[in-house]
Length: 418
Image (cartoon, rainbow, N blue to C red; front, side, top):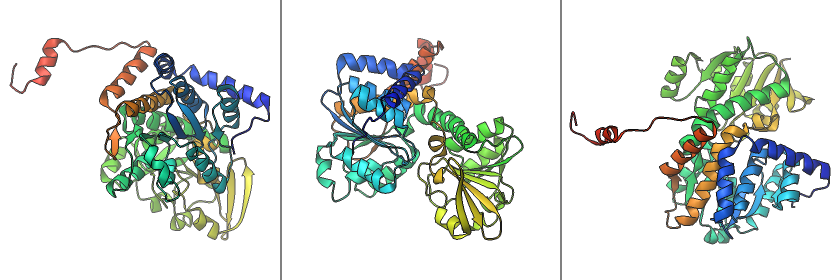
């Protein structure tokens, strides 16, 4: 069911928050102004499965200015900001199928509602919309799809697996793989917003705590950096020897999770994989250990295993569930194991989402122009990536040097001394 605006004040609040986020999104604003003039997405049906936040609302506004006909649903049951959803419906007349705290049945019902708009371009955060389109029931819809974009590491992994198996039926632009996305959104955005979510949910002091970061990709790097900056003793767990060396040289302790469990006060998973924190880990954790996830799906923490060890579960704070174990210990799970930066906080700051969503909008335009792409996962064209970086620097008032003609010639030559 389309999100209905029952409270005008809620929609007004959302509109003001959307405007506030827009102040920090100058690149997307510039793209939106050009889109409004040129209408590169005129008449294109765009189905979006994204976190319904103030930043996403600014992306939706830019896409609509470009002429797109949009339907939006949430990419996580706990990530929707209801006032933003209400504002998009009331002030932008964009159908939104999302409400914070929706159960799994409602979540997938909302995805099907977006598919009912027969999208020609999909815009995904985790590939749920794409995978739904590729099911038997939805297979007839795929024929009208030009292409899609994917926002996250987790989604790109899923889509590359589909492409490898030969089942991906239309081209996807991996927005996550753009340098102006993962180097900033994943690292600085996830780093700050994850810490923000943990603190809002628990109000714990990080200084002096043993803070375990599971996974040292760009998101893990960001969280480890921010936790260290707040005085935590950071421990990193990894399965990649390269990333483990990097974490070590970045000044963090590295050890297997089974050993880190004995020391950790706070645990955060950021791997994109399943069952990272399992039964054998819960059995070794301290009384009062806090466990959170900032990877895309709630499967990184084996919640059924935690329940099997518990005699009682109770909600002690918003987004904090206390699992009382049979041996007397207590383990606190944050945000039901879902993205803690969106469940308990507001997600990534608008400044980094400015570049991420600039990639989304320009990739959608690129798909309209390049209708001959193979059914595979493609990188964002380098010229788009660099243009976004240029626009971001300009908005920040930062100037950089340019290569001289002599330098360009030297770099392009193979002969010594030319």
